[in-house]
Image (cartoon, rainbow, N blue to C red; front, side, top):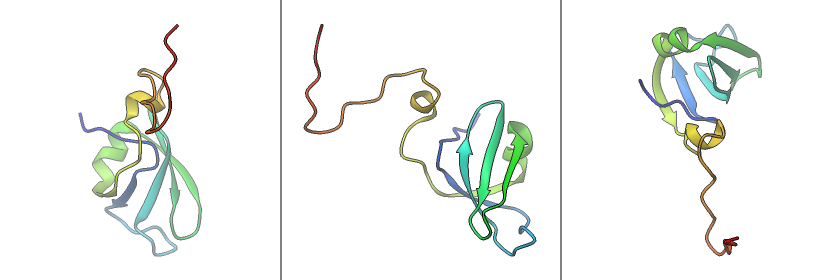
Length: 85
């Protein structure tokens, strides 16, 4: 299964009525919530429907899905001290 990240920018197969084909993923899980880059409309699709309708990934989100879903810890940013305790 392909990885879907929070804040991915994707191109869908059909244009939205506003004319835009670009969408930003705002929630991941069993359903995918996304916002139209043209008009701001928010829609939800189930994961299988999202993968079927998606044409390509334009820009990948900053963090892996495991981190945004809370399944893995966030990596420490450069310059941050990790406290072992």
